[in-house]
Amino acid sequence: MAKFVKQLGSIDRHLDKIEIVDLAIENAQAIVDSGQYDLLKVYVELKRYETYLKGLIQHLKQPTLVKATEMGSKSFVYNQAKVHISTRTKWNFSVDQKWVDLDRQIMLLTKAKKEREKDLKEGSNLKVMVDRETGEIIEDFELPKEIVHGLAIRL
Image (cartoon, rainbow, N blue to C red):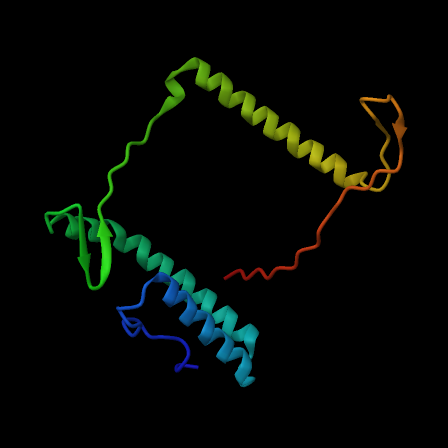
């Protein structure tokens, strides 16, 4: 499998993001097509690497920002990657009473929406509704749904 999963530093630096994704898709298809691997085992191991890499990136972000700042420019190319040092402002609106009131209303509406969704799911087979234009009572209401399958891995 080592021929499909690239080691750190072995991805061609001239590839852009789309090409890297295409390479990943090509390698994934080769893993599937080969038929020699336990795909569930491969997937779990890749999730471990994903978690590991996210942790590395998160903990290297701040010292790397310091190092990038020492380069003296806001934007530059480094190791065939475009680097841009950004600055953003985080605002704290909680000092404004109108904002606090609006935020509270949003939370209440979100809670009401979730409760309505729960009610609709529980009674989705038969509902009594009134047509607003005609006043007609409509009893046969089925909530549309789509079944989506996924895979969750917890490490």
